Length: 346
Image (cartoon, rainbow, N blue to C red; front, side):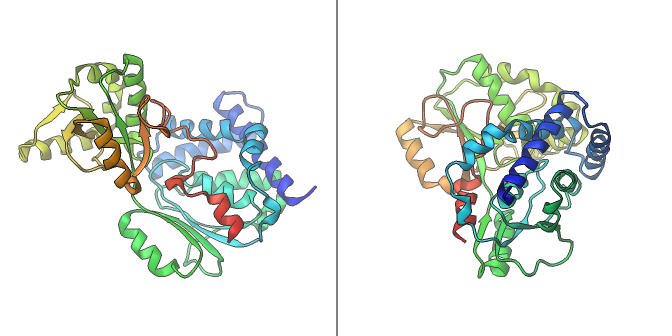
């Protein structure tokens, strides 16, 4: 059996374990016990990593790590063309396992991964790596978690902010690289949305407390749009205000807005503020009016490098369906950069 096949099988086995665990079908008791401890520990390290959100991330990955979906994804590439290399991955830590796709892509194409973890997400990925190595011991020579400065690598994938991107470019610019910057997701409403679609939009806004680049942080609405139905449709998400960190952000940002005499719309757990920016603070979403969809499309095309997902119904060819921003497929690459293609050609 070749190495690609062995690694493929290990990831499928991981997907099966995660699926069983998330569905309370405990088939591997010792590993399940360890994972429960890891979930608790991750929450202690990062208050945004609630059990619900960690389980959502694990469940999402369990649904992707199947033989069928991995085969379909990889069928677009010739993995035999890969030249084995060491790939440094500098991970973000804004949502649970946000760097797992880079980790998966690097290993399944036949490379060695050198992982620099974010201090905000330090325990989940090492656990999954431990499980993979237990399933396929040969992976031990391909997975390294680096605490100190990264050295001796052939390519780098780094995810961070616009500020850290400049730092990454300075240090890693001479190596083949993918350097990701700030991006946000938007929703374009026409006023014809159903209650069900707007309720699903709530999932795009509130999942992971809006901390992901796939989280909707900006609404584009037609001139004189009435937000009444929107607020009614997302009201079921109101328990989010019971999370202390979210509530603190809500109170703080509301106070800032009121002291600055900004006009806001709010319902007790979400604030809407008219603003041209894309990145809204936690507990708030920006909105902007448009006078014609054609003008809006032109504007968004010009600012495409700021946008991760465009949520809408029947507006864009490459739109994301309401409620699905946090369920990307294996071929939905961050910033639209094909990571497999990058690794095969490097």
